[in-house]
Length: 258
Image (cartoon, rainbow, N blue to C red; front, side, top):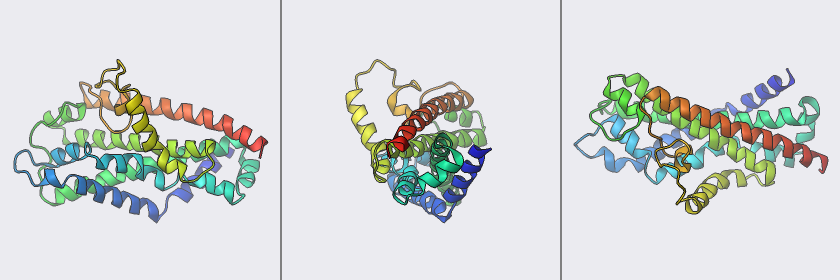
């Protein structure tokens, strides 16, 4: 019960007008990155624009930075404002830390999910057709080819929202180890760029869910939308579980030596 109360408190703090601002910024930035695709006559559809738009350089901003802005700095801010002892005494160190991380994940999930919804419906309002022709080989496109417009777009939105959840939690995770609020904003993109260089020659298939690029910014290949989303969900749960366990253990040591 203590954990649930702590989680509810954090979620109430996170659900503010800032969520809709960051979601709108997500949609605007993605639109800027996709302007070149929006002016083409062939294959210009909502799916074409969204699919190719999320492969541009703008995706590094929208998927590695924006999900962290809403809530990832709050743990360090609690520490600097001397609010951490208040919360940990009432809820416990582990409950407080895990609730913070889960709320960070929720913030990232909602920022990306709502942002994509706004962008997709804005494109539809601009009278672009939902789907015209093939532009990729994801399971979500397979659903569209079969006429399942809702399944294809819903899977796509949830897929990238889960990427936002991983980054939102990772931003919070970093501030547990590095006592700087802005480290949580800068670390996800910095780590991705570093690992992309170091692990560029790994034997992992680029179409596999385990490939580094497919953890956040890309979509792995699977036969169906359901399988693609399930594999993404399992990977997300694994990464988030590891972060929660490691952060809770380190936060205990941090409190002991405070």
